[in-house]
Every structure is written in C-alpha cells, then in structure tokens.
Length: 501
Image (cartoon, rainbow, N blue to C red; front, side, top):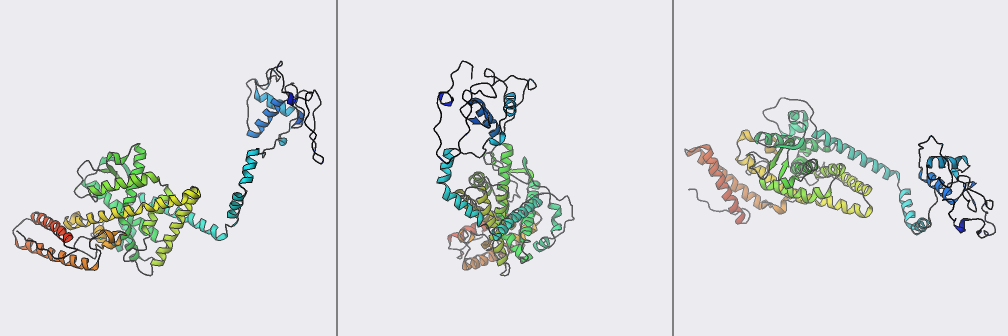
C-alpha cells in the first residue's frame, strides 16, 4: 500500500470498532489506537494479529507464507529495506522482518476450515460415520484375506515373469516327450525357454513360426504347472487336464496383451497394421501369405485382432489384472478329465483369484465403478473361448494332414487330430457344447464310425493304387472336406453316400 492511499475504514481503530462480544466469551486483545504496523510502518489493524500490531497486508502475507509452507530467497543478502513503499519488493526480507517483530508461527491455525467446508462436513456426517464404521469392522479375518490377496498377486506376477524370461540353460532334446514327462520334469523343455520378445521386427517364416509355437506352448505349460502347484491336491494328471482346457485361450490372451504393449511402444495400432507379434521378434501379417506350418489360421488372426481392439485395448488392463485373468483361465473347475479329488482344490483356488480380482478393482476404483470394471473384465472371456475353439479345430486339421516330422508331439497329445477322439475331446472348452455339431454322444459315435471307415478306405487306396503319397494326401483332403460338409448337412453324422472316382 502506498503512502498516500486511503485505508479501509472498517479496519482502522479511529473509524470504527467491532461490537462487544457476548458475556462469558474471551475478548480479543486490541491494538493501541493509531498504532503502526511493526513490519512495514503502515497503519495497523484494530486488533493484534499473531501477537503484534500489523497491517492487513502484512498479517495476510505472514498467514499465507506459513499456511503454504513457502520459502523465499533474497538477491541482496537479506539487506532489503521494508517500508510501505517497497514491502513487496523482497518477500524473504519481509518474512524475516515479521519473525523478528514477534509474529508467532504457532498462532497460525493450520486446521482452520472455511464455512463451506464446515457445512459440507455437517451434511456428510452420515457418510463419514459409515466410512468410520467400515474401517472399524475390518476384523482380523478381513486383514488376513487382504494379505492373502497380496501374496497371491505377487506369486502370479512372479510366475508370469519366470515363464516369460529365458533361463539361459540348454538341454538335450529327446526323441519323444509326453505331457506327463514335462509336468513331472520341467527341465526337459529348457531348450525352448528363451526370452520372449514381441518387438515385431521381421515377418515370420516357417522356422520362426515353429519356434514361436514351441515357446508359447512351453510358456503355457509353465503357467499351468506353477499355478496348479499352489494346491497340493492337484495331481499331475489333473494338471494335464487343466492344461488341455487352458492352453489355447491362455496363449491367445498373452498374444493379445503383448500386441497392445507392442502397439504402445510403436505408437501405432497393430490391428491397423494387420500384424500379430510373436515371441521371437517376428510377426504374422494378414496382408501376406502365412507360413505353411502356421499354428493360427488367417481367420483366427483377424478374429484375435478384432477381440484385442474391442476388449483389451478398451480395458487397458493393469499388470495385476492381467495375471489374475490368466489365473482364472487356468483354474477351470469344468475341465474334462479333472478328478473328483482335485475339484474342491481347483474351486477354492478359483474363488481366491475371483476375490483378489474384485478386491483389486475395489481398491483401485470407486465403489460404483468397481463392480462394472469387474464385469467388463469377466465379459471379455466368452469371445476368447469361442475363438479358442476355432484355433483347436485348426490344430486338429494340421495334425491330420501334416507330415509327422512337422508335428509337435506335445500338441498332438493335447488336441489330437480329427480321427482320434481320445486326444481331441471337444468338450473341454466352455462354449464347445453349443458350438460343436458333435456335442451329443450319439453324434460323436456316428462321426467316429464315419471317420474310422473313411480312414481305412484311404489307407487301402494308398496301399493298392500306384500313386504318389502327396497325391493320396491331396485326394484324401478333398474327400475329407466333402465328408465334413455332408455330415453337417445330414443331422450330425447320418450316413451319406460318396462315390470314389
């Protein structure tokens, strides 16, 4: 305030005085009439502020500095002159002058609230009481459950990391490896445990596609085995049953999630580029011809890209949500072949994962949004299972027509081919009963008989006709395709006539 400015008359002692307080209330200490500010020399207010007589500007400056915890610096070594004409020139010297003049830091009420805040607090009293009750009812059981959730999520995060990282070991391959062997002796697959990198640098050829297939299968085996190891009641046979049920959807979820991560690094959309990253820095493209031994069909790749764009990209799953979703896919209590002894353990583990996922949503989002978030995450699974059924059918067709040296024995044991019902159980997927025409026992038995008869017929043709093996394979493929169409049109396996030219 300049020297010739007129002060506010309501703040000056010689103009007006505040009314006397009611009887019984403490009176506020007044300043001497006509007193000057001890900081800048301007006319002081009618009352003492922070223990001294101060003008309106200096007392507000002191309150604001202490309330906000501000610090200042001086360009002239703290030798600035503080007066009515230049008190705003140096805040450092002005604040030091306040302290030296006797203003008390402890007199500033840090917890003072405005009238609006007090009114809002009164209006929200019921809500505050409810929140306090919520905190008070957190019993030791609830605390133990929260600790279990944190431990479960930490374990799943560690599983995801160890399954994706390369272990740096090399092992000698074996002529034949069974599912029981890799579950019982995980070191057998060390040669395939390379570090998974999804940078999408070069298009995948047949060699890269085969490497990616083996790496993803090893990753799915490691995930299933380590999650199942959380319960002692789950035997190796039960782990194989869980693996059959979760291998494809678990792998597709990983490919979709890694596709989103790669798109974020490239600052573009992999779906827009029509590419699917693979774990060896290669990619599959829908604009180019796929390798002959590709483990995904062109339609499956497009469907996976569409599912990734509609669900994963919009959900923007956190790392914790992603590992919990993977665990939900693994602990499938409806997996065919799961023993009765293992069902309670798998069900209990699934409940733990469900509870941890809900608790994570509740802790991360508001209560009104937490339930919706959980529902959106779970609703992304049905379409993934339908896509998995399509991939399984593609695998079985590959196993039927490919040469033996081109097949992965573990995948053949998981899914089999179209002739082997024991290794190609279509009921292990959740939605397969409503999607597969061979879901009923009658349809399965009729189709099995037809496949067996057809298989014997082509074997006889190959044995007696002087044709090359490739010609026989091509002819068999055409006839099998025709048989598939006839069976679908004749009510799930009714016999149909086929003339062999």
